[in-house]
Amino acid sequence: MKPFYRAAGWLVKKFVDPESARSRKMEQDLNFAGREKARSGVLDYLTEKIAGTLSVLFWGTGICILAAVILDGGKDAKTTWILRPSYGEGTAEMSLTVKMEGENEIFKIPLEIQERQYTDSELDRLFASAKDSLETVILGENESLDEVRSPLKFPASFAQGSIKAEWFTDPADLLDDTGQLVGEADEKGSLAEVLVRFSCQDREESCSFFVRVFPPVRTEREALLQSIKDAFKRADEESRSREKITLPDEAEKRKLSWESSRESFVPVLAVLVLASALCIQVKEDEKLRREVRDKKLGLRMDYPAFLYKMVALLRAGLTIRGVFEKLAEKGSLQERAGGRKNFVHEEIVRCCNEMRSGVAEALAYENFGRRCQLPEYIKTGSILSQNLKKGADGLADLLEAEAVLGMEERQNLARKLGEQAGTKLLFPMMLMLVVVMVILMVPAMLSFSAG
Image (tube, rainbow, N blue to C red):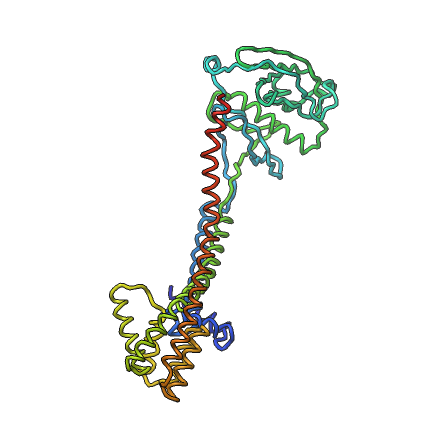
């Protein structure tokens, strides 16, 4: 991590002005939150945060480069076979790139791969009954069945799936059982017979009709692609019962070289690296804001108790400094005993340390109020400083009146926090209401349907 810290330190010294308003505000928040790193200033805080970001970017970039090298830059891999879909998975579509001998262009071919078929004995066992069928429309974009130049529509079911349909064509190398034109028809038109079997439960009904297929108008490139598709179709038909399809090695007496497309996850990995680096920045700032917010809330809640303790000790005869020393000692004992964290006690200890180090007592009380960053504490610090100069007569009564006001503000704050908690619980309560409604309504609906 040392190189990252050095680089981050250079960036901070180069681009961050420690005297700017933003830097002063950040240093104030760090001091207020009581972070250990605040002792060396805001520059160390920014250096550590940027060093973490640089570390993520460096190692993440290295992983991306390594992944790209391992995957050979995302290049397609040569292959001589592809897996066909298993039983019941239906026809699959995939794209392969193919290079034909004598052609500089690499073609990307969309292919339809039929699912692996059952044997006759398996079909006898698995064949399901279905309903009698209704009429169907198969024209698609064609004007009539006497001139078919685009694929026909062979729906698999009718009547919202209640009626199943099976389609058969002859010859299959001209029109397949999905309605696709897979072969090259004669210029004058080629006849193809279509047989459709409608089934539901144990009843079957079949009808057949003829269509006249004409070749679509193709460019030279489309003709080359069609020849490759025809070669693949023949290889597909020859290996229908096998798990793998051997890809054709030639078409139109010209050699073919196949490559399978492989997606690279390097871009996704790079995005994750950038997102992680951004999260480090946001996380550190959000953590600091949360610490400041929690400390201000704790200081507001502890304010009345702090004043009442001061009043009691002052009336017992202690000086203001003696009160602070006593509160610091008592707070330390409570923390060692496992009590809850008291933010006022932390500032009291800092104030006592300042006075022990030679800071004037009046200035230490004013610094105490400013460090708390709340108007009530700033006011209390000013009161203590002024009464130290004028005398402590009436100080206990003045602090007691301030404690009464602080208690009222504390009650208002507690009421506000309770309202916020109720708002946060609104969504879970709505979810519980939905669950209760489901528990009540579902049995009632089931009983109605059963009746």
